[in-house]
Amino acid sequence: MKIRLVLANNGSVARDHLSLERTFLAYIRTSLALACAGVAVVQFCAIASTGLGNIQAYGRPIGAFTVALSIILLVVGVIRFYSVQTHLTRGLFPVSRIFVYVISTFLVALIAVVFGTLVSEQKSY
Image (cartoon, rainbow, N blue to C red; front, top):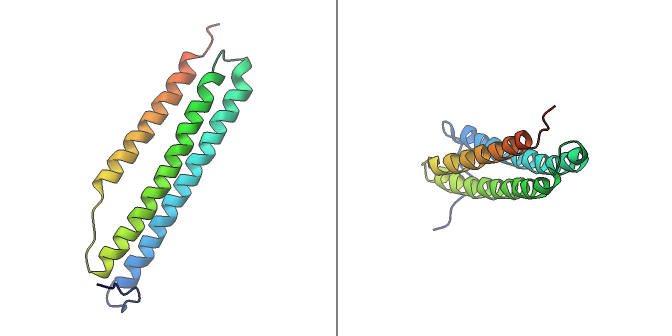
């Protein structure tokens, strides 16, 4: 069955597809922000290694995990875009709870690891 990508603008069809495009762009923005954060963590750990002890050893793995998470988020965004686009052409909308749970869990874990690393490496004065 061939899916037609030129749809009649009945009701909210155009609004739904434009909303889908905005959501995809939000996935891209979030992915780019995470990639930038990964690079920033590596750079911060390289600069701050003199004052915070051996934090440089943690910087690269945390930065690499953050960049990997940004790539995963981008792939999730692409998969979600095409999935929703296919469903919208059929008059349906797939709810995505699993993506929200997985992404939230990874981000909370990342924040906890970065915070824990920074707190554990502070010097007592």
